[in-house]
Length: 164
Image 1 (cartoon, rainbow, N blue to C red):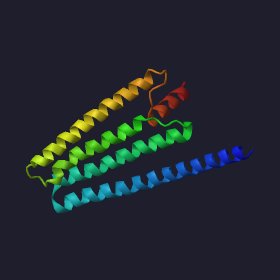
Image 2: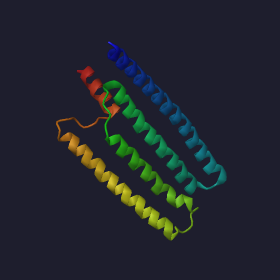
Image 3: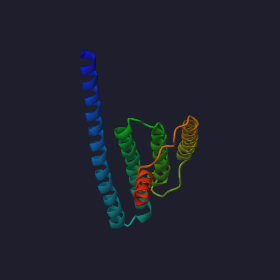
Image 4: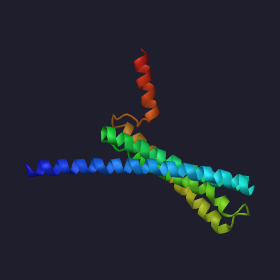
């Protein structure tokens, strides 16, 4: 009896925590979109379009990460399933962001040798993460599970079924 009540209390707490995470991700997304807008305006104001837009693109990559996390949170809240691929996707997006921002860091100057080494390390990490992402996705398909689907794919399937 005590165990049942304790388990129910933990389930409720877990649900509340996931609601908090969802609201925090939504708030962060709005704030990052505001920052992106400010970066674009600043690039125009300072007349540094190339590096300004690359910096804004780096900010936009954060929105992409948040979108992936929100999608994973929605899937978890609906089904209780969390796909490991989300971690690899977030890691790949973050590494891509670093590749974009390395040239911006130098202010348009020639990339220094130590930055080239860092650039190569980030590229290698991106390759390794991409391979791991592919292998995890492939191994999950081999266990008779369906590939993780995006929410927009599910909405399209639902609208197709309703139109018939």
